[in-house]
Image 1 (cartoon, rainbow, N blue to C red):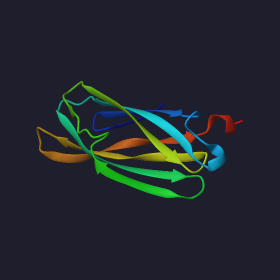
Image 2 (image 1 turned 180 degrees about the horizontal axis):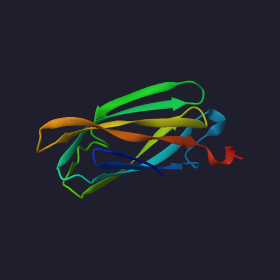
Image 3 (image 1 turned 120 degrees about the vertical axis):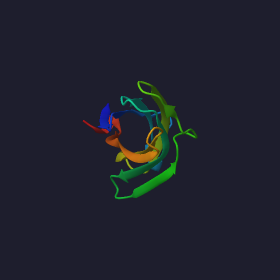
Length: 128
């Protein structure tokens, strides 16, 4: 599990290789990732948008920018958490993802970036 803390907002990511959905002979590798966001601050915050950078072993790089996460823009009061699951498809057996979320402080009406920790996308049986 990878972890980052920015302005008392923690982001933890757990990755799962989806071997039954992947087709390595066709260069299609699928991962699911579970993200847990916890508001450890004393402010109410809302996740507005995200920016991901996805890098593959074969040299391909993608940038994904969008509103919210999985169609939602969660509002987190102090001490609250939000968890979601999403996925990624690569054409290589190794990759790296990371990026940031844009949050808004409801008390201060200001926006700020929260780091998403870099995490590896690796096919387990190729690690040996």
